[in-house]
Amino acid sequence: MRWHPNAFTADWLEDALSAPRGSLKAFDATPIGTGQMSLSFRVRLSWKEHPGPATIVAKCSSTDPVTRATAKSLRNYSLELGWYRDLAKETAVACPPCLHLEANEDETEFVLLLGDLAPARQGDQISGASLMQVRAALLQAARLHGPYWNSPRIDEALWLRPRPDIDSKVRQIVAPLYVQFRERYADRLSAAVLEAADAFVARIAGYFEFQAGARTIQHRDLRLDNLLFSPDEASAFVVDWQTVSAGPAATDIAYLISTSLANREVRAQNERELVAGYVDELRALGADARFEDVWREYRVYSWAGLVMAIIASMSVVRTARGDEMFAVMAERSVWQAIDLDSLSLLGN
Image (cartoon, rainbow, N blue to C red; front, side, top):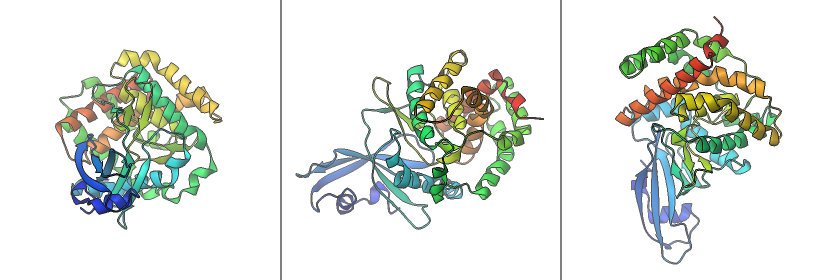
């Protein structure tokens, strides 16, 4: 692969980082993160006299052909490249600064060189988050959603426009993939969770056809593994923009809260306050958002974690951690939907 760290050269890194030729003395790369769709590395740079960064993060396409085919079909790599090329610099969302990007013609191979946010640390999807971490993440969500709330600017980015063929494909694959998902996780998920998931999949058309009141730019995979937190947990940084899209904001919010809070009672006791705080942030940013509307959509999209778990678990390389991560995501999402009686909003 042309843009894997194994293929980096000192000359290429110097050019990519706008450093003088001959100024980079040495470099090495170490894998970081647990990404399912692409690979990330921390690159340590040793300079002669040039005051370049000591470390950067390099992100590149997966070496697995199945994963790469999925990314091409769903435009995952193209979406992230579009985010860093066109949108990241004009939002207040805390995300890594893009130092360089390259891709081949169909964007199935790429490299992103990003600023290293250390000592910020990645959240742990399986262990779950603290309420402070969730609040920090919701602030970043508001900073993403608020400026684009029902804004015509959303359609200015051609690469972000909906692809009916992809939307149709996603709708078509969830039910058949759920058969495989259910078989894989039958011994891991409780009977109550599986029963509710069965009922949801039988009425999934109502989920996809629900008309949200507001449209904005979504992250669409806003969960702990895609968030970094400062050591004091008060600040969050959003990474992995391979699913960025235009659509209802509540998808991000329900997905974040359900999949992040490991304790069902803690989530149930705090989610109205969390959503209300998020709406307050939206309004402070000028968005015409009403709590009642956002809360109703939040209830509908509480199934988002299950939908993502079904699709992603059957589309990427299988690992032990991945199996548990997708099971946890589905389990927490379904319990949220049960507690909020979300199925009743999907019609018959």
